[in-house]
Image (tube, rainbow, N blue to C red; front, side):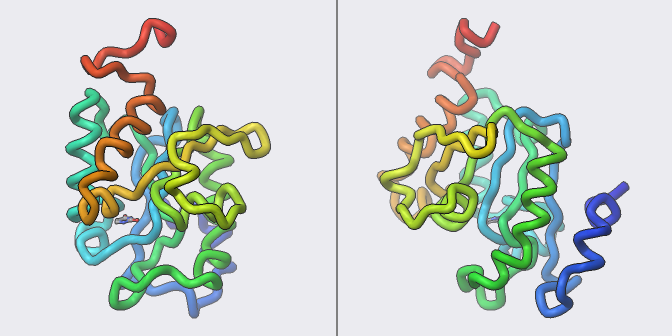
Length: 188
Ligand code: URA
């Protein structure tokens, strides 16, 4: 069953104004994954390849994951909005609201140990806050029994190099990985 079939009920109810086959990118990864990464919305590269986080931000994310012996395959990777916003603008409030029920369903199905929200948009939406990522990042919040850790969007680390070590540290803590790439004793 592909993503559209899996969530057929949602797609059949989604207002056509919020859907465009040509700009749609489904989530990727196993529903048994322990970690769920939530980005903002796909970009041009993602649309081309039909997969989230495969462009420049995705390469940065892969590079950081690689440093801690973590592979994309171990994660469920999704976006707040599954349609690429025109001209790479930020997703609008009504787009986020239209796609939110799908994200909630994904969370219910994957039921990950930890949700990692990447950047302001996903973090503010899932934590229902107006606070910025700089003050939220790296902390673990619980929402209806579900743990959520906000961190910087990998694209932000591309524009501002000072964010990269913080993103890396947050992810390392989230996955319980030591500098060596080994798992911490507590995880054994
Ligand atoms: N940025 C996102 O937020 N999501 C993607 O899938 C790619 C870039």
